[in-house]
Structure formats: C-alpha cells, structure tokens
Length: 217
Image 1 (cartoon, one colour):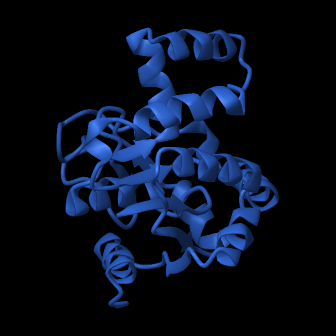
Image 2 (cartoon, one colour):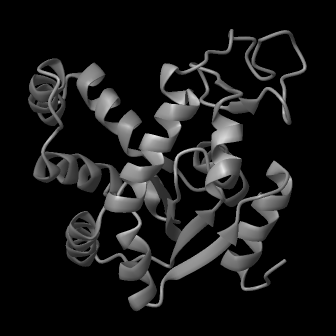
C-alpha cells in the first residue's frame, strides 16, 4: 500500500501515521524527519540542505525531491510507504508523480483527514507531544497516563509555541491557500479518499483502514 496522508495542522496526521505504519507494516516517511536525518547523517544531500536550513531558508523543492526519491528507493519500501508532509501543493504533487513513474511505483490512495477549524483550534491549544517518538497527546481528551510523560518512553512532553489559538488560525489560513488545492488535484486523478477526522483516535484509524481495504466503516 502506497499512500499520502494530508490534512490541516491538528487533524491528527502525526498520530495516525505512526499507528497506520505499525498496523500496515510499511515505513512512515515524514518529510521533516527525512531532512533532519539527512543532515544528521552528513549525506551529500543533507549537507546541501543544511546550508539552507542554517540560513533560515526553505530547502528548495528540487533538493527535497532528491532526498525523498532516495528514501523511496530504499529496500524497506517494497511493500509500500506512507508519505506525511509531502507533497504540500499541486506542483510538488506533479514532481512526486514523475519520481514514482521513474522508479516504477504509483500511489494507491491519498487520504484527506477533514476536521472543522474550531475543533482544530481546540485540539492544538491543549496539545503536547513527545520529542522522542513523536506521539501526540490531547491534554483534555487523550492525556498521558503519567504526569506530563509519554506513555511509551517516559520522555517529558512538550508544548509548541505555535499552538496558540491566534497562531493556529493563521496556520489554517496558510493551509487553505497552499495545501488544500491538493484535494482537487488528487480528486481529479481518482485517488482522493476523504476521512472524517472527528472522534477518538482508534475510531479515525478504523475509518482510514476501512477505506484502504475497501470496506468503509
């Protein structure tokens, strides 16, 4: 199964990506982590990317695409992969399509998690995440069992400054302008699958798995 997970900030992409990767037995490929790993490992592409990151600039699309292509060609993607954080716009989607054609692969689906803006603002203003494993907790609805510690590795949870309500609204506006056109792009290619992202984590996971299996919940 090869698919992309898209949705606004706070839709639950990070949490669902971890769960789906484990359930389906395919690698979760978050673009941000991919860039950081390339920089940390000192690969030629990572060294080049780091020049932009240190200058506070966005890493150019062509360089990001080279890093993604390298990852997609790794041996563990034979049974599929889950892309998270890329593509972000139709232009990147077209470039990804070219890469997949060249390495003789194709997407099976694009999952769009849909959540109302107010629900997202409420979620993010009470969100905390584990800097070690990436798991995300909702302090109001899905708190950790320990006092401020990750249930899986006991790492102290962190709160992001950009989760303040006014900042979240701006992030949503940027998403609508830049990323939402992907929905029309993939819908036109018959790949888009819409998922209601409101509800418990397990509930949303079942919806996604049901759509991927062809047995909607």
